[in-house]
Amino acid sequence: MRTGVLLVNSGTPASLETRDVRAFLAGLLGDPRVVEIPRLLWWPILHGIILRVRPAASAKKYAAIWTRQGSPLAVQSEALRRGLQQALGSDVPVALAMLYTGGTSVRDAIDALRISCQRILVIPMFPQSCGATTGAVFDQVSAAFRELRDVPALEFVSGYHEEPGYIEALAASVRDHEAHQGATRHLVMSFHGIPEQFVRKGDPYRAQCERTAHLLAQRLGLARESWTLSFQSRFGRARWLQPYTSETLAALAQRGVDSVTIMCPGFAADCLETLEEIGMENRDIFRAAGGKAYSYIPALNARTDHVLALRAVVSRSASAPTAVADGTGALACSG
Image 1 (tube, one colour):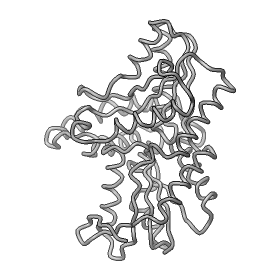
Image 2 (tube, rainbow, N blue to C red):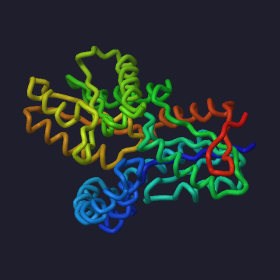
Image 3 (tube, rainbow, N blue to C red):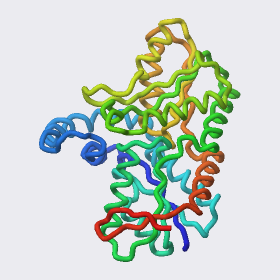
Image 4 (cartoon, rainbow, N blue to C red):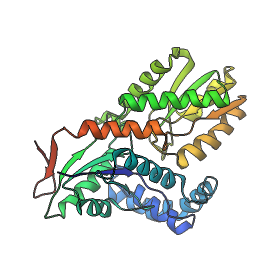
């Protein structure tokens, strides 16, 4: 069977227009995987308050990182898709889809692959598996398959948080950055946060973030006191995974660590949360607390070693059991 690869990222506003930012936020925050509040309670808050106030403020943040080509996440995700396509060759088509606007939908990307492929390998662009991200990709893929009569074979990659090539690519990005920018006293590995209750319900995300961080520190030969794992991007009033990145940076500066390097290993491509929140907001927090040198390491994006890490994921999956959808749209194993 000919295999097609489907990369899926979260999405991004199609433009800086407030209406496009609102459409993206509506999709993201309207997904029950992302906000686990009963719809009867959440819908009035989302549509009556948040989507009236937040889009304009978010549009200003996006404007600070927008490029001539458009959203960094869309640009870098497409560059990564092209790199993987080149690495795999023309016999393995590679498509890119976005969960919440800003690109081709999951359903349209699947339809495009089905023209020439009898098997689809789905790779969510989230190294650490989480219900709010990986689970959301599964939901949309499953929904698309539910409507099909000619159902292709399917394999779903739930994560690659300890893939050797991925860890080595992260380590190489640190070494490359230090070679050009110089080393600092401390490395902060900042992952996107999720509510603590998600983990209590069985989400593997925190454990996988910790595994990635420890493998990376080991690969770099870092002493335990020279690096910190933290979590960013809190939303709402619930208690999220800790330590929080902003508080971690302030505490480091206050205890005399005047130079830090920060990276975001959980982001396959640079986006608002890395370039604006980490690259700008948290830099200001660190400096306001007494810190001096602050350096952000870009996400892996379309680096050659990142492409090769994903190629290894595809190659390893080539001989793994596949899955097919049954009549209800649920996925069942198939040898």
